[in-house]
Length: 81
Image (cartoon, rainbow, N blue to C red):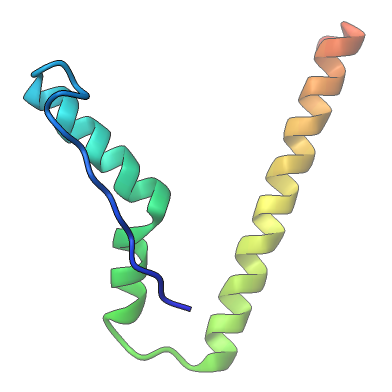
């Protein structure tokens, strides 16, 4: 289940701007969920609790996607709230 994350940012990619490089690195680590995995592994979690959290996250993601689709549909139809 664990995979090695390869997050690499070079100064050349960011045009020599160190602040931009740091922001880019943070975005990449968030996208790869490196910090989230470290927090999850920092203590033991019962399998039932892990399953419950996974189901809750999946439900929230589904609802978020559904709301996103509805907003896009409303924009296409020209309706306003």
